[in-house]
Amino acid sequence: VAAVEAFEDAGKPYPVFMGEDELSFMRKWKETDMTALGAVYSNFQWRTPILAAQKIWNGEQVPAEWVLPQSPITGEDLDAYLDANKDMPSLHYAKFGGEDLPGYPEAWTNR
Figure (cartoon, rainbow, N blue to C red):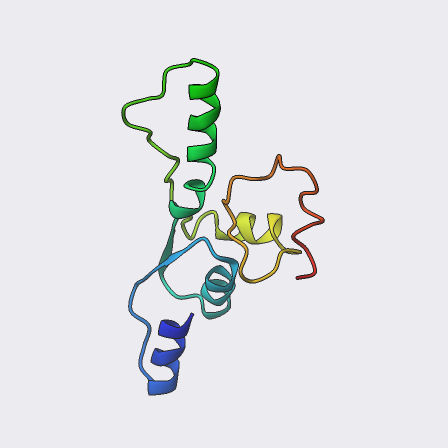
């Protein structure tokens, strides 16, 4: 968002922006109608070691290469992700992968 606002402050047109699935960026994207892409990757990392540890403790094989979901949010699905996360705080990530956690979404709202 800071990079987007730097273009605004300078009175310059927006370039194509590569952001994340963080809601503050996605909301700014929608507000400005700029051309952008929301990359998704890093927030799945927190679960992967836990899932791997569970597999190891259960004597299961862990993949040599663990390919995480990385499909980006595009302009076509921006509205759907914003709507699904409308009650979430700005620092929440739309595709964080913890929708099945106890207390979701109540523990994340109103922050």
